[in-house]
Length: 315
Image 1 (spheres, one colour):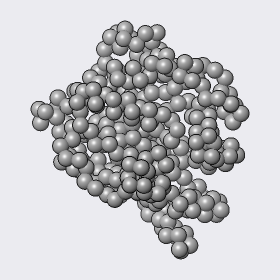
Image 2 (cartoon, rainbow, N blue to C red):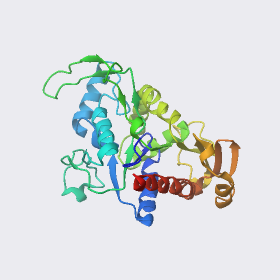
Image 3 (tube, helix red, strand yellow):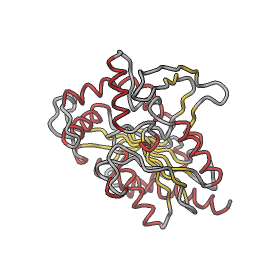
Image 4 (cartoon, rainbow, N blue to C red):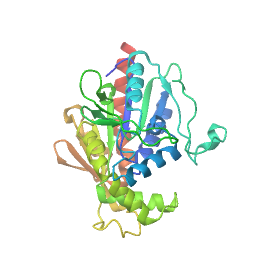
């Protein structure tokens, strides 16, 4: 952790709602006059979209598991290096992953490609990350080195976890936030997003969910055990069979469970007073109406950001 160059990371699987939380932080930073360097997890993919999809298909044909939730298709060592360099000197190299939504921002680059690596903007107050692996700690996973598309897939195994070979992204993060709906709700959101926005068939999306389940269990969920704050949306309507649900439960049809790793740092009577209809279910857990998640996030996180910046000024 760095008091001079702090890092805020929001972690969660695709479709979990991390982008909504990122937008809330952008509004917070703009309102408070905070200059942030924004980093997207997709920028640290190893390959462009077509190549990643090809490798996933080939692995699937060979009966192997290869998904974007796992480490093999990401440059996690480079992500950790960025966090380390920024926390020490406020510098580092970043790029953007081009999508259909932001292609116009990058001169019309094709979706599924990357912009060039460039230095982090100078004189930023903090770095903000949003993606799959902001709290990644991988001590003993096996990396499979995948060949370029013009060669057969070559598997190179090496042990990760001895000496300097491990990956510990989380150690450099000053505020780690998890966004994790209950799993049935997350699947409903994925199915509706990928069918309505990406044009995938329901069968293809369900197959993708099942293929990613092992990597989700091993590499995504462990991050939520070390987050400083978890936001978990829980529907209050029936989602017992997510594969036949016609609609995504709305915010008003949900509650949000907020878990605090260090509850002693927060004055809960004030938060409860400001977020109406909220209550404490455990000494470290608050429950709020689903429609007030953004309000609660700003109430809880604004003092934490101020505290980080005050420490930065002192140093």
